[in-house]
Length: 420
Ligand code: LLP
Image 1 (cartoon, helix red, strand yellow):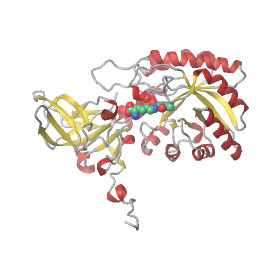
Image 2 (cartoon, protein in one colour):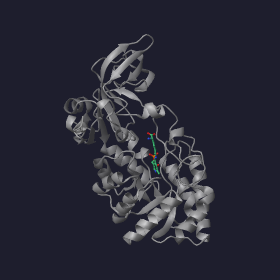
Image 3 (tube, rainbow, N blue to C red):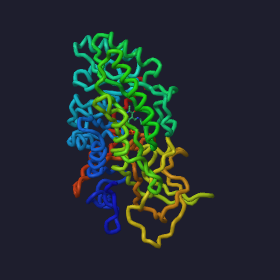
């Protein structure tokens, strides 16, 4: 459920008319709904036992105002860089509610995290364990760790967002997991606290999750028998969302929560989760204006002022996003097939191919839905285009929470060398 709805013929974000917002902010822009973010967080966290740490995956939607919205509900954060860690701290999420994932943590990032009192590092390799031991020992601050294990389970999602099979760079191979824990137990400055797994993203079937969680629960019992203290199970993120409104919906968070609790109950561990997309995807839209409607030889192109630099998901993952006009079409409005494209000079700058939509007119506004997760965070300044600004709405209030960059911010830091 989300809070983008037609009211009196105009798409609103909560109580805010998107025509009015576009007139004030200019297009394109991202728009996030506080009520939807809050609802998704509450539904998700309410599906797990008390004491569960729901660490929002900052990579999905890292705007500090959004992080603060979730922090006020008690969310923790899952971060994968020093930058994300600093943003989470700035949003008021305490270090003690932040977990640090990722295969390439630098020693500087480890230092920052230890100084922030990080809840845990999810360690992804033996060399990383050695590096963390050296940093923690030098600082005199023991590093709480889980080892992210690679369970070799196929999440049956897009290949580019599959992370739990043996061919991917993620986690320590299943066959070396116990040896890695034995190494961790011997290293100074390392304190083992649990086990971590994350098998991919936009997963719409509970079965691969259950297979992975059951394997991890079995491993945790084995590790306890080996003498390790295993008090936390970090089960990662990855639960899918409906992108296609008329499609079979993905599993309900409550079914996912019940399954995870059942599979891990005997261990009595604290559960940690790292949802990103589930909280953010349908809490955000990208509002854009139709610049031109161009008749090609074989296709009709609706050319938007948003491009792949603003939302790269369709180009990168062939993802489907609903596109709706901001002004509600009349019931008798004719429908046409469009390739909805952006202005970037790439054939891959396309939001929808041969999509049937209500007839579009030049100058009209459209909203690209389900764009809250992996939208603004993956935007770039390709073609020297300023990435779309971000607006956060709450009831009738709205604020620009990241402005459109002017030329100074966009390329003012570039330098012409003296010798040129
Ligand atoms: N935890 C870890 C360790 C992760 O790698 C990820 C996502 C998450 C949690 C959050 O997963 P979520 O709940 O959002 O599925 N850019 C791609 C998605 C990349 C996901 C990377 N890892 C996309 O736009 O589909």
